[in-house]
Structure formats: structure tokens, C-alpha cells
Length: 290
Image 1 (tube, rainbow, N blue to C red):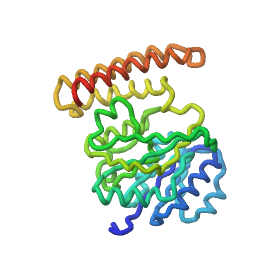
Image 2 (cartoon, rainbow, N blue to C red):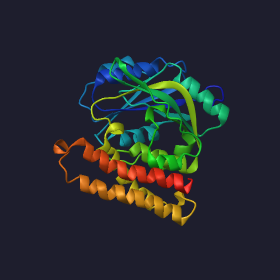
Image 3 (cartoon, rainbow, N blue to C red):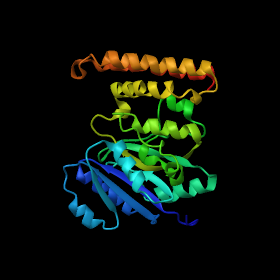
Image 4 (cartoon, rainbow, N blue to C red):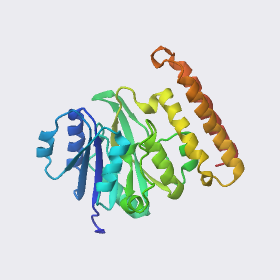
């Protein structure tokens, strides 16, 4: 590693909507920090991006079959040779100083991984911009079990952490929440740094998982087996059983909700199903002082 300017690997999974991909690539190309390795994983997209390959000759493009963003990011991790790894979704954007500021922050405080503040927007409408300020830092595992406030394009990780442990990968079997499961694995071992500067712009489009109660309940249900098989998340058996019950409830409610046709079920039903395990876990974590 060059102490003054370590190489940063930027991993971008892509599936359709070439216009947004080009905007994302421009936000990387215009970074104030220039020692970058940019890896684009075409996840079976039907869009022709040959002109982008010519436009950015120093960027590395790979094509895979359509296995989802998590699988594409895993390919990028294997291809990366940088000292730090960042992820950027192909519809999101970075502020010009994002990498420069985050590198300085991590080196100054000695964090293995960190994330930044961000804003969300709907396409180009300034009326819909919202700054999220997800002040999640330090030992975050208990908070992660309730709700994940970490946006994937905000994260930077020391590459040696991922390269030395092949269990630290995105779960390719998860339809939703594969990023949250990944952060939970990291949170088990390392404290998280938080940089409050707004350095990332997350585009909201269509069926955004973060705001869909049905998808959020599905993610909670998927975490049931993750928690069930990891007693070491908790200091004692009582904590483990209390928290496991919350995910067991989510798992059962998710199975019940799956019998309701999605397009014919009032949204408040999904909210009610999601709210019960969410509130249970929130109260349990507070009661257990985790």
C-alpha cells in the first residue's frame, strides 16, 4: 500500500438503464482522488454499453449471467487488487470529494470499514431530496438486527479484511437484504466509522426495498437462520433466545403474508405484519441493554 495514496477499487454492478450507469461512471471519473481501479460488472444486462467501454478505457468491464447485485459485487471483490474497496450502484452518484474525504477519515481514525452520510432523490427532482443522516457507528450489531441504516454506496472497506476471509461476501441466495446480512457479518468483528458529510446520492426508483414493508419483512425472515446459527452474536443464552424469537415471528409472518396476493392485498396489512417483529426487537434490545 502507498501510504499517501492507496489504490481504491470501485465495484459497480450493472443491470439495465445505461443512462444512469453513465451518470454513475461520470461521478467516479470526476473524483478528486484519482488512484482508482474501477470495476464494472455487467450482470446480464441487455443494454449495449460498448460506447461506454470505449469512453472509459481505463475502467475494467466484465460480463456475467444475471445472478443479482450481490453476486456481481462478489465477482468484483475477487477481481479487485486495491487497498480499499468501495461499492457504487449503477443508478447512484458520488460527490466529487467522496473517496478523498473517506480515505482521510479512515486513515486518521484507524477504521477497517466506514460509511458516510447521504441524500436520497427521485431522478432529478430537487423537491424529493432528503438527507438521511444515518448516525450509526461503533459497535453496531444490535442496531443492525432492528434496521439497517447503511447505504451500500456509502461504504468503504479495507481490502485485506475481505481478501483474508472468504466468508465475508454478499449472500447470493437472498432476494433482498443481502447487503444488510453482509454488514452484520462485518459488524461482528469490526467497529464501524461514520463520516457525517453528505458524500453520496442514492436514487429512489420504482419498488425501493428500503420503503417496502413486504420486502423488509422478507429480509427479517431471512435473518432468522443467520441469527439461529450464530449464538456468538450475543453475550449470553437469554439474549440469544429473546432476539431469536423476534426473527422467528418475522419468519412465520412472512410465510403467512406470502399467501396474500401482492397486488390485491392492502399495503397496511404488510405494514402491520412488519411492525410487530420490528417493535418486538426494538423493545427487546432496549430491555436487554444490547
